[in-house]
Length: 363
Image (cartoon, rainbow, N blue to C red; front, top):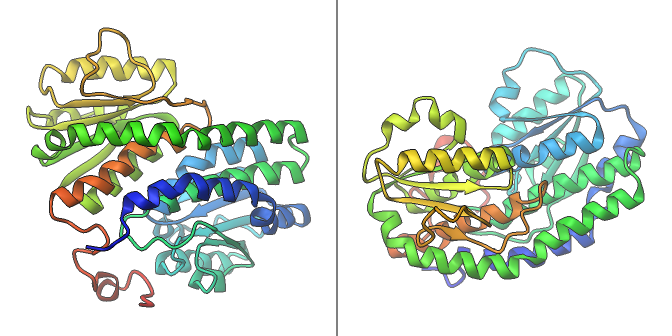
């Protein structure tokens, strides 16, 4: 077992995010400068796994602020597209380690379309930086576990900050509006001091029940769909049994047929009133089949039993709550594996990327 744990990285997240917030001007300057000097009418965020999920989490906010089309694309889908991009498209490759071959391929394809290219990575010597016109350092520090935690939240925050600083550069928001957004996201980050201990206590109290069924579904909606995918991936990487995530409404279109009495379901009840009401209704329906259901949120109706649910002191900010709702899922991924005899720093096959040719292996 390694001396440092995934949980230690989670405990670092608040300080990492506050440091990024403080350095936001220098981190985002390369893209702000590009937006000032070049016509950009579309931004494509390319990344795999955690990087893709971060792009999904951030893209709507970026699009609303910049008033530019922003898309999240898996690199393999981008590289197989017909030529629909132009010199006014900016392709931003995202990879914490920076050596994902599929993301590098996407940047190479972007160059054949005469697109502008940018890279976001923690690794200053990364492969994707070699293929990028402008480079942004992630500034989150090393993360040696297989499943990334602070890299996800750092990426989401940096993409939001690209939106805020870029919108300032393009004069699409005022200084006062930008400061209000920064204040709100800082409030969410500072609230980690309250959320992490509460979420940890919940995870420790339900861990036996959660793993006994050997099958977990994660459900959510809106901005939290990105957390549904990311949280499922974290748990799958570390618990290493059947875990999958679905949008709440997509779950209703067939997936519900797979639920049985031993299935565990985790719901992310974020602050959209209509969707939260739908979640409560679906939870009540599924209660007829399985009692192993867990809701993560800030508030629940009084008729919902509280003992299994994860009620946290969230800010529930309408735009930035993604940073809060991922924490319980990251904590599940960081604490329960050791109970199963799994070290999340060790891949099930240490040579996988070399054999599969999916990443440039440097160590």
